[in-house]
Image (tube, rainbow, N blue to C red; front, side):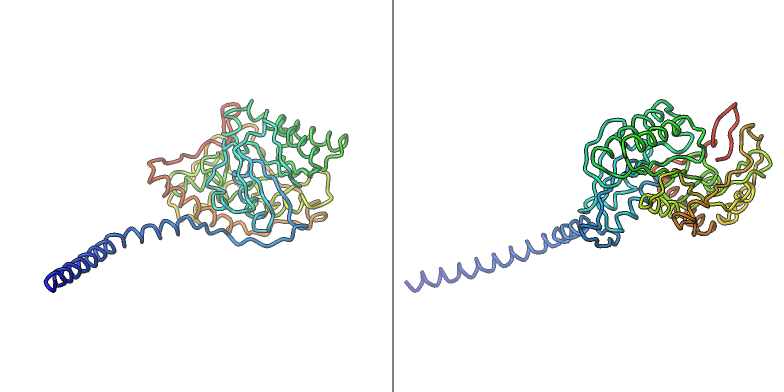
Length: 366
């Protein structure tokens, strides 16, 4: 009997040693897996930009069409950080999901892949209608689609505003002779007067900043891209034509001020500070530190010699005017473009500047 007890004791000790050894092996083997799981959990823990708390009565439900685009995504940032509930609608023709991906998962944010040419049924308090290709290469790529977006799309948003009693802000262009834009504005004012829809119209002048497409054919993006890549900065004509550019954050502040105002007539939102095209080329070349030279090409016949917004109405009725200095805005944009070039170089894609506009065989500055 004593022998049996001794054998059992020995076996138990060996089993215990074996279990301890197995546990130690398992711990050593599982530890890296635990670390990986912990890292994975941390990667899924979204960190959002700071958001202001608003009470129920102050918090608005806001729809932004084209909200994943250049201007729309910056407007999304402001309205989200101000504490509102924001729904972004975009068909991603020119918009990019990564422009708003830092809000995905936030309780106040919703992203809908939708074309405004089709009706949308949603409950909102305000509608910022920005859904339209803004740069010449994009809206000339499919002009019929652009026309439908600016007519049928605008009509759908006006219908939505009428159904839910929302106020609508229509983003127009400084080039008011554009046929599609005029049709959109006419629809907006017709329903405003006939159906009681509250409409605000922003006439937007040249704007630049981060998240704009580098090859969208505009002066700022063309010059920055050419300077960063060491290519000639192309100036059409003598470069004496003047342009005025506002930084995107100034425009966003103007849009919000206009939406929340009682101004029902069109308001110009732009920067009245003029610079010649040649001055822009020289300034961007200097800020980039580029060795590129300036190349002069034949001037287009329809290239405006001057483009300067009159913002007296915005100053008087909205208390708004641009505040970001040109060089500050350009430095931020150059930094963004530089990072984009690095990112795209890793994917073996190098964007090329596009001619600003093709008409009568020659490009012009916009």
